[in-house]
Length: 449
Image 1 (tube, rainbow, N blue to C red):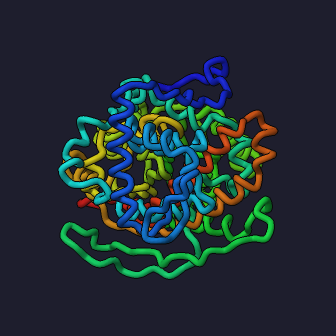
Image 2: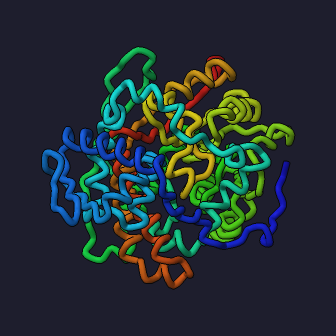
């Protein structure tokens, strides 16, 4: 199915769910009391400092500071809505932290053990499920994508570098072989963490970030074997940087997206670079590719599998398998989580789903390997893990986003939006800095190729 552009359906609104008022009553009181006890017990084991106002009571073993401005609201929101309530209590100002990412990194590193194991077994009973309208079906996917990527190209340009790459950069560091465990990829490398770098004026572009983004793209193109004459498919256009670089190598590119805003700017950037004759950008769901009958020598995708949904991973990789020509190669960049955490959280509704990426869910590398082995002829042959590089990328984005607050407001967004996005960027940074999340470039081939 090729989709038509429809600007009437793509309202450029902030798309924020309303912050609900907490209903009074026994349920709220009881759940708040349980949350208070669990939270204090967890904090007592963490290297953080939590101060409750106005009493000044402190918890934790010392470390990044969190202030509970309105403790009763905080515990009530956490008690009723868990981690979604934790994030929403930040949005309302019930709590704050001067170093938000620094504070969040500490519990993120202990995420699997913060809640006692007997209570973790009850997770499925208390965790809200992903709403049916957010499942990444063909009917829902464009709306899911539009919620985030069609906010405003001008917004993203405020905090991204000039490549407009909205994915992890790869800074200039060494790589080393990863420790090999059962089921490890033979060619499994880990990128050495980059050194944090702060420009005196965060509103300016950082040349080294653009260089690092270029390094990421060029490595993916190398892994996929893209040279002159290569027929390239890109799933998830972004703002066109990978397609431009592939065309610069002499490849012909078919790149697909579900974002109207990204498509229009990508076409402009591709034309300005002089490659309109080599690159075709199309508004299309990846599931429609098999029906076209086209085949490609290389398939690339950057941080798109996270939007597919776990029910459709087989469809996604099966589609790639069908359109990949004999001897072809696949290179994707994917955000991942540990396999056990993926299994524990699968199907749940999170703060990120509610406010940032409807329908999104992170795979594990093990799950990707299982799906491709079980349902396709693709085989995972290489992995470069670079989660520390995403932590640094996000730190820079967040710093620049906050420095551009007035410009964000001038685009028509409000203070709540700024707070939502600061929490999103800091929350994500904490995930990678703690090692709870990772991002990898994954290379696939065929056993016969």
